[in-house]
Amino acid sequence: MQRYTLANVTSLLFHIGRYFAFLVAAFRRPRKVRVFGRALAAELEMIGLQSLGIVVLLSLFMGAVIAIQTAHQIGGWIPAYTIGFAVRQTMILEFAPTIIPVILSGKVGSNIASQIGTMRVSEQIDALEVMGVAAISHLALPKILAGVIIFPFLVIIAMVLGIGAGAWISVAADLSSMSDFQYGMQIDFAQYDVMYALFKTTVFAAIITSVSAYHGFYTSGGALEVGRSSTKAVVYSVVLIMITNLVITQLLLT
Image (tube, rainbow, N blue to C red; front, side, top):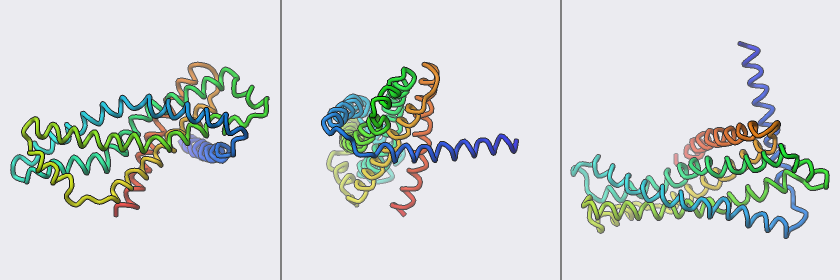
C-alpha cells in the first residue's frame, strides 16, 4: 500500500513538472508568423464557431429553467423581481463562466487531445521535429491562444441568451411581468461580477486547451491510447476547473 501511494505521488509530480515544461515550450515565439496566423484562425473557427450551437442551446434552456425553478421556490412569498435577480446572478456568476467551459471541455478538450494524439501515433510530430519545427509551440500555442480569445465571447453570448430566455419564459408562463424581471435584473448589479466571470473563463480556457494538448502530445501507442488520452484530457480538465473555480471564487468574492 505504501509503495502504491509513493508511486502515485511520484507519477503526479512527474506529470506536473512535465506539464509546466510543456507550457514553457509552448509559449516560444513562432518562427513563421503567417503560418501561425493561419493556424490560429483555424483554431478560432474550430473552438469558437463550431461550439456556438451547443452554447446557444444550453444557455437558452438553462436560463428558462432557472426562471421556472426560482418562481417555484419563492411561491408568491417573495417579490416577483427576485426571478430576474436570480437568473442574472446565476448566469453571470456560475453557469456561463463555469458550466459552459466544463461542457466545452468534453467537446474542445477531447478534440484537441485526439487530434494531437493521432499526429503523435502516426509519427507526424516526429516528422515535424526532424524538420527542425518546434512541435510543441507549433501545435499547442494556436490552440491555447484561440481558447483564451474565444471563450470569453462564448460566455458573454451565454449570459445574454440565458437572461433573455429567463425573461421570455417569465412573461410567457406568467411567472412575472417584464417590468418586474427587468427591475430584478438591474437591482444591485455590479460590473465587477462580469469581470470576475470573464477572468474565470480565460483561466479555464487556458486549462482546457493546455491540458488537452499536453495529453495528446505525450500519447504513446496506437488508436486505443489516443482514446485514453482524450478521456484523461477531459477528466483532468474538469477536475482542475473545479479546483481553480474554488480558489478564484475564494480570492475574488470574499
